[in-house]
Length: 303
Image (cartoon, rainbow, N blue to C red; front, top):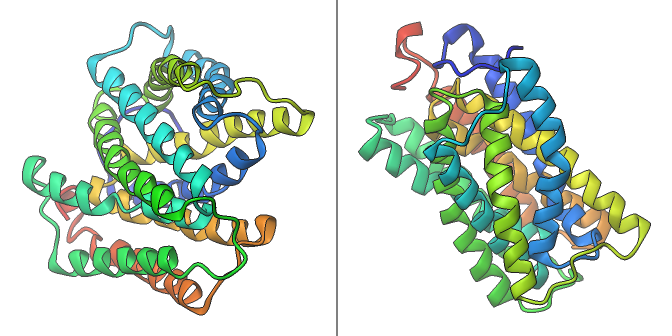
């Protein structure tokens, strides 16, 4: 699997979908690790990017030579991702892992509308139905939190998490645009190199705990770096090979993983509505993939 920026190709479609699902599943554990770092919310984002940068630098140099300088689109990726992580991590502080991850992943609506209006990626009616089903399932998971989940301030946490969806959508669109001309690892490296200092300044201004105070917290910070490298890196790679709208729906696998991980590790109990929502969300993801299949190999971008 080479790390180059190419346009979607029918022969690579299923490989790209597999990478996207893998990346979404890996990223689904990031909320758990954030809770375990023992640092402030923005500081956890700093460590996530810092520990991923060396891996991304090595991959970039091996795949496409020197790191070079950040492009304007990489600057936007870094800004949007810093905002995404900052709002999401603070959402995690006040609400459950499952609810925060679900709400922050409602970006497909924004992404699909933007791609349709500005990128001329006109979705089929069946795809719009699939997106509605997937988002409805995610919404069911968000409101269906069972008893026993540790929540500090659910309304505030949910509002921050919902705002995250807007920043995540802009990041998604910026990555999709950048992948037309740049390798995934290079784009990821520069977005991280730009996002990390922005998050560090935020953490310092808000008086956060910057350093992990335990070995377990340090291990969680390192784990965030590997999750970012493997998960977000796989998503960025797949973005160069799939329509933006489809990719934004497929990553709704992430809140399903996060919700059940929160149940196992933090006792965030699952209610029947939440369980049903997971089934509905995954059904929507499967339907979206089927609905966006190319009519012909040449139609894979516009479907």
